[in-house]
Length: 164
Image 1 (cartoon, rainbow, N blue to C red):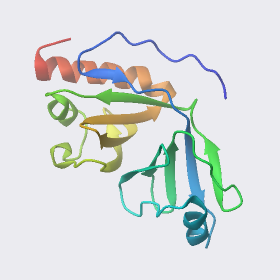
Image 2 (cartoon, rainbow, N blue to C red):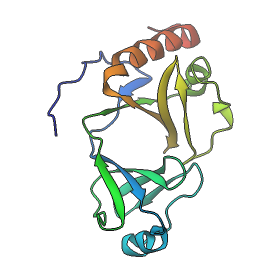
Image 3 (cartoon, helix red, strand yellow):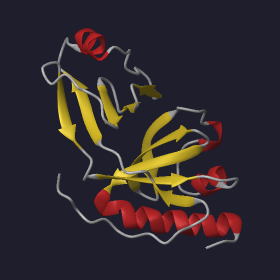
Image 4 (cartoon, rainbow, N blue to C red):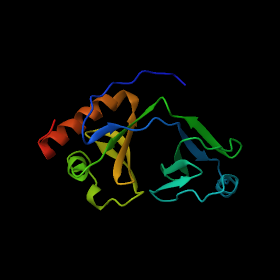
């Protein structure tokens, strides 16, 4: 890992830094999805969903691809595995104004997002993955865009809630 220093964010009542955890991308080798799922002991999401498995989270990241958050043994013989921990930043939006804040930045109908739904989209022209878990939303973006995304979220929060 790079042990890179990310931006420091001031505390905000609705926007916070996601809990630090290991992040890896996982892509099944051609024809290996059934064996990969058998080795992992789980049916991997085939649609934009998030699942919990053995203390980790697995998010759909496109056809035949997933993000794995947390510690989980991954069978390298059956899939391409790439460390993403230093490359992605997680920002959480929570509270009674979360949907209102995100509606200002996302070109998707976030109000219809159910628990464990996942989308690959943009927020303020920044590529993000967004999912809903335990009543809050998490946005993952490349580390180099984290400061800009945080700033956009703060502006959206200010105009949505009257708080900065």
